[in-house]
Amino acid sequence: MTDLVHRPRRLRRREGLRAMVREARLSRENLVLPLFACRGAGVRREVPSMPGVFNLSVDEVAREASAAFDLGVPAVLLFGLPESKDETASGAYDRRGIVQEAIRAVRGAAPEMVVVADTCLCEYTSHGHCGVVRNGEVLNDESLELIAQTAVSQARAGADIVAPSAMMDGQVGAIREALDGAGFSHVAIMSYAVKYASAFYGPFREAADSAPAFGDRRAYQMDGANAREALREAELDYSEGADILMVKPATPFLDILRMVRDRFDLPLAAYHVSGEYAMIKAAAERGWIDEKRVMMETLTSIRRAGADIIITYYAADAARELK
Ligand code: PBG
Image (tube, rainbow, N blue to C red; front, side):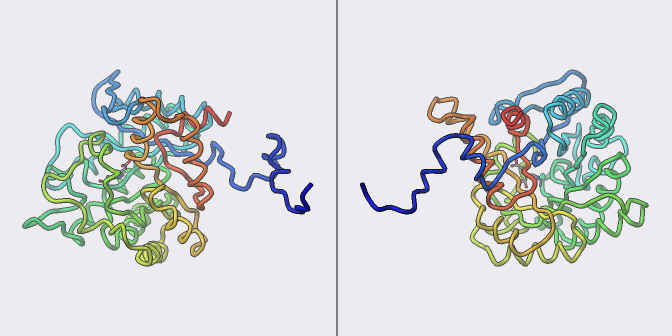
């Protein structure tokens, strides 16, 4: 018999005990499901690098959103694949644009669902960059007007939240001003405040057909080595009127998530991105890991690091586990 006084194992002996003292809790209310809308009807085209994720025609987006809502997922984040693209991303702010149609469809099919629209130009520009390009440069201030116009058209279609992801300086302020000016002061902004230039977005660019035709996004997205700069980015968006801050990607940047959580009192979102999802899928397909357990452990780690909201392609699967 040893004289150990402290035996943490006492509280691990059965699930009831473990649950009583559990610190971070993942619940369905935390989850947001991203969906990719395309033209057509009855279309469900699986994304090769993202098993279980589809390009969905608007009718299918509505169906998928309702099914997720019935599982307890309260929100969707909508992306669009337009039929044609141009230099000025006109599909992004077209009243009849693909995302605008998807927003209306989800509204109709699941009226209580929270509808978030990704506000960016990269899916709509012929060159695939997130702003206006001149002489090989992505111009900042020239892009703001189009981004703001996109947000207003998404609000007009019925979005509850717009989520600017272009990483243009001043985009939150420009959107806030435009929304207020157009009578949408009640529409919230979830800012991709801290968005790193990440290789983990690879599968998304296949899903959204949004890979840049030349160069990369390192001249506007953040350098993955920077932590202090994350606080600065968050501070700017806070002061420009963001309602929710986001850190993206999630698991490679959990330290950043914690820093932003500790420093700001706004709700905090984390985006568990396409590559993070694809890695789990790929390893699980080979039988190398237990997919459900790795999924839950991953999402719990994001909660533990401080996220209130988790955007994940696993939202419906996780909701099923949490039932
Ligand atoms: C649009 C946007 C991207 C993602 C979300 N919004 C792609 C990018 O910045 O290249 C990535 C999401 C994911 O990888 O799941 N700018």
